Image (cartoon, rainbow, N blue to C red; front, top):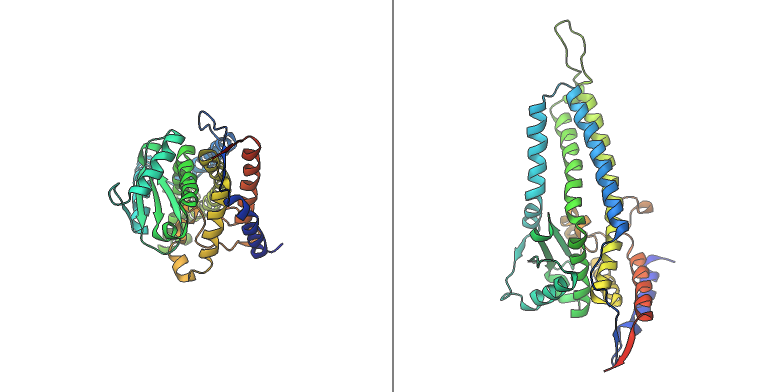
Length: 336
C-alpha cells in the first residue's frame, strides 16, 4: 500500500476513536512511569560501541604523534562544550525563546500535569515562531531540560492532540535518550571536523612522523583522516538506529501518560500532512535538528529508510493502534 493511501486509511480509522461523547474509559494507570528496558539496553549498547570506536580513534591520534595533553585538551574541551552548551546553541539556532506561565498559561499547565504523571521536574518551555508544526525536547538531564513547540503546531492541533505530542517529548526526558543523542553526536561531529579540516589544510597528502634517520614512525595524518571518516560513519548509523527506536519508545510513553494513543496518532497524521505542504526551502532550514523533532522536517523516506531518523508515520500509527486496543481492553467503562 502506498504511503499516501495508508495515511488516508489511517485517518478514516481514527475518526471513531476520536468521537466518544458519552463514554469515559477509566484506564488502569500504572503507579509509576517505569523504564523501557528495550530502549535502555540499546542505549547501553550504543554507548559501549561509541566508546570503543572513540578509544580506537584516540589510539590512532597517539600513534600519529599527537601528545596526550593536546588530545586531552581538544577532546575533553569539545566534549564538555557539546555536553553543556549544545542544547543552548541548538535552541538559539532555532530561534526558540523561553515563555513564562503568564505568557503561555495553558501550555505551562498542560506540561505541568504531564510532568506530575511522569514524576519528573517541570522543564523549561520554549516557543519557536515558525509555521512548521513540530515539537522537540533537549537537555543534558531531567533537571536541565527544555520542551519546545512551534507556533505552527499550537495552531494546528486540538488540546488532546497537543497533549499527546507533549507527552511524547516528556517521555524523551524521562528516558534520558536526549542526553545520549547529544553525547553520540559529539563523536560524529569531532570526526567530521577532523576530516574536513584535514583535507582543507592539505593533511591528506602528508605522511607519518619521522625520526632523525628519516624513518616513518607513525601512520600519519592520512590514517587519522581515514579513521575519522570510519568513526563518523559508525557514529552516524548508530545514532540513526537509536533515534528510530527511541521514537517508538516515546510514543509508547505518551500512551501510558495520557491513556489516549489515538490523540497522538491523530496529531502525527496532521503534522505529517501539513509538513508535506510546507516549501522545501523552509524544511531544509530546520533539517539539522531532524533527530530531535517528533516528525522530521522532511517526511519523505530515504531508500530503504536507511538514513531516516524516524520510523515511518504509518508504522508509528499502527503501533499506537495496538496500544489503543490494549488500553481499551483493560479499561472499565463508566457512563458520564
